[in-house]
Amino acid sequence: MDSERAKNLPLWISANISSIKLDKEIDRNGKSIKIFVYPNRSNLDAGMTEESVQMTVAGTMSYTGKLWNLTGQFSKEKFYFPEGSTEPQIVTPKLTPDKDLEPGNYMLTLGARYGTVTYSIMLDLNVK
Image 1 (cartoon, rainbow, N blue to C red):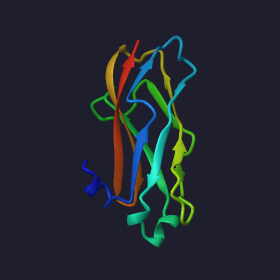
Image 2 (image 1 turned 180 degrees about the horizontal axis):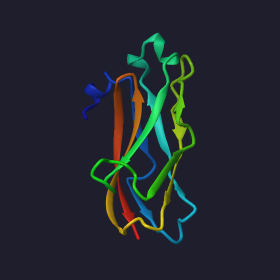
Image 3 (image 1 turned 90 degrees about the vertical axis):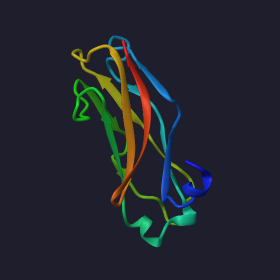
Image 4 (image 1 turned 45 degrees about the horizontal axis):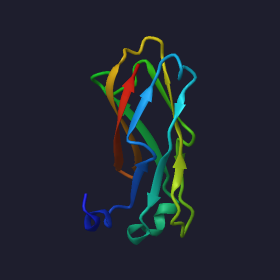
């Protein structure tokens, strides 16, 4: 998305990595990544501090997008931006593979829902 369009969004997200390597043996207790959720103060209304941002996760492990045989747990399921804040909220999803998760390449979609819109990023997930 170009920078002019991004200015119109109330928030945006990024991750500290673009792909995740998940080894079912080594990472059986979970593997964490960092998601940064940024407030776009140039387009936020005063209500932003009153409405929460909720984190979402989906994957291509199943045709429904559910995380079959993989657990995704966020350090913060929902949060609020403090009034006047321009600093990102850092959210850490922990991905824990089940022994039945099939090795392969998947897409993981992590999102931040604000109001009726979800802002998402997609990450490659390689399971061994």
